[in-house]
Length: 146
Image (cartoon, rainbow, N blue to C red; front, side, top):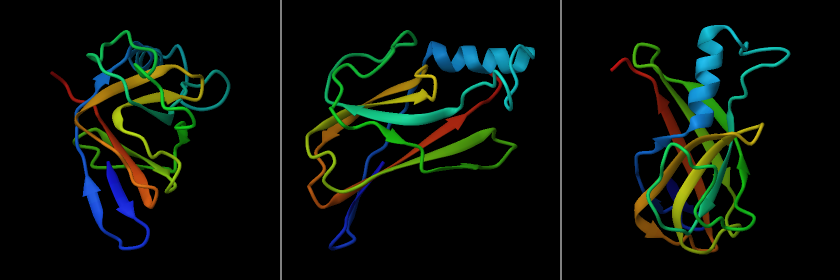
């Protein structure tokens, strides 16, 4: 996540790891099993929305949203890019205009267009965007055999 001041261009960055939620695992399972397509009717919904919160707790696979949602923080996907196919990564980018959120952020939650939970993260160091900082969140999904 990057906070960039619209006047000075100065940036601050924050990084964290997320917990995959049941909605993501279900969507991928349906697609891999052929029960749903990734295009057309009854397609698997991709993650396209992020919301921010200022709650506390431990993210879990069963989470369905932020511990404490920041009102008005829901942001739609700006763009996605496939990274190296060998690593199985995709980067989702969400951009929130300056002044939309100016309260402390402790967590972020990723969901799809059907409102299904994809991932939840808690930042180790909470931060507060100023009224002149844009928020750019790059959420990287990596799939690997374990």
